[in-house]
Length: 422
Image 1 (cartoon, helix red, strand yellow):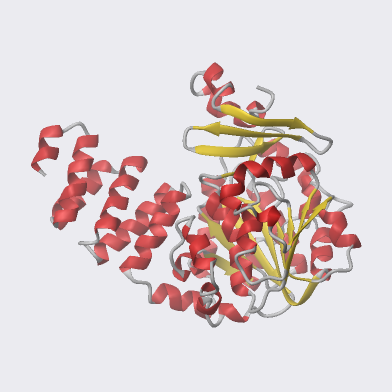
Image 2 (image 1 turned 90 degrees about the horizontal axis):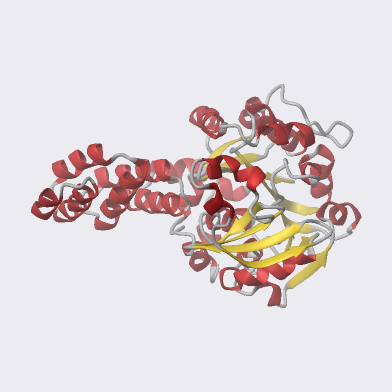
């Protein structure tokens, strides 16, 4: 009960049997450390790692974000050799980094208990801590950037949410300055943020603070819940060319496929905006500083709020009017039905059911005989409550794969005889 984060997940527990919610799953690891209480819990179909009750990593819906935190900046960098990962978590981001031809990855983790807990995700992170290129540093990530003399091609910052005590210091102007100072020429910083349980003011403040140090930075939206901010010390050439060469690095495509990422389009199409357009989104927002860290106090006040939909809609408004880099614009203009199918299946795997449905419907309209797209569409319809509208669409298509999925939907609706007829 101490490890289940009831303070964070209380609304979900209150909707059903509280006793069951408090004791769901099986606790396979629990340690109380100086930096936090770390636990690993198994529930049917998923294993999660929590710090002070807040789930920070898992082998289920979090896999896409955990992998893209590494792959996106490394795909955008032409020759990454030195990488720094701030925050170990499950180790999946570290493992994804090591699939690229890097010479060394410094991973900075403040909690020895998290290091122990990451062993429960050895299969997902490919035993990353045992890779000879990994240098584990037990310590504070911000202090490492301030005191180190190393320079990195890519720095990945994946802190917990800023409502957790002490974490907001990883979202300040001074922190981003420290990270920029540790970047080699052409280096890239990847910063994680989120759209859920955070107010519009706070989210735009994080973006404004990031842009105060990386004015040409860009934002990428993953599964509607995670906002990835990419900043660099110079122009990112890959955004005007493509990422196909980096994609072909041995092991990269296979690792991405584990999160249902099958092609470059699925990654490039996550781009939202950059430069002046991203700054316009964050205009008039407070820049967080060490001396005026309002986020530390405002973020905890919004953890029970329902802000995600509004935050995503505002980001989508920015995306619709933003100028897309050449590689992104070209990928979108030339996208095939198979690529839309792949993106839709990726979104479904990450739990973004509405996005997955829209992408798969787009794919089916372009390729009505694609059995995999039709199956994905039917599953997305069942999960999102779009059964009747999808039933009409499948009836109109009338291909054999469409009739197979039509039978599935009719069975879900309880009309078994019609399902058998289909």
